[in-house]
Amino acid sequence: MGSDNPIAVPASDSGDIDTHPVQYAHDFAIERYKYILQQVNATNENVHKFLSMYQALATTLTGSGIVLFVGYKKWEISPEIVRMGITGILWLTTFVGAFTCLLVIIGALAWLDYRKEECELTDEFVYPGFRRAPRFRNFVRWYETYVVLFIVGSGVFLWVYAELVILPTVK
Image (cartoon, rainbow, N blue to C red; front, side):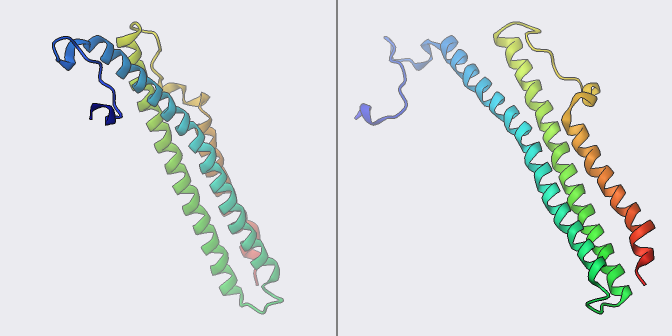
């Protein structure tokens, strides 16, 4: 009956499970460290997924705005409707960009938290100072910073270009 148990617990002479607490702590620390590194890697990969999502949606929305602008006379759509449509597309693109920025920022905060936990774990099980804790002031070296700046910059460009060039020519 004991062989049906998928989790093997080392037997001790006294029958007490707590006879090897140092080994259990060591094994737990290794498994926790593996998990932390896996989560750090996942947060890094998520940024690329979020950027791809933004690029796909922003390109599709912007393209639909261009198609509307180019074809509205041929389709006999009133200029007021075209202006409302282009403005609506800009707002949708802005919301997609804001949501993507939010996801990237949350991912960066999660990364910071996992790295802090990694440092605490290595301080305890390797030696203090084995890994330096990340500093927020190093944000200029994080690619997440530039992803957010790209999204914000492209959103600002779309609004400015639409307001100065596209919408005034819709007559």
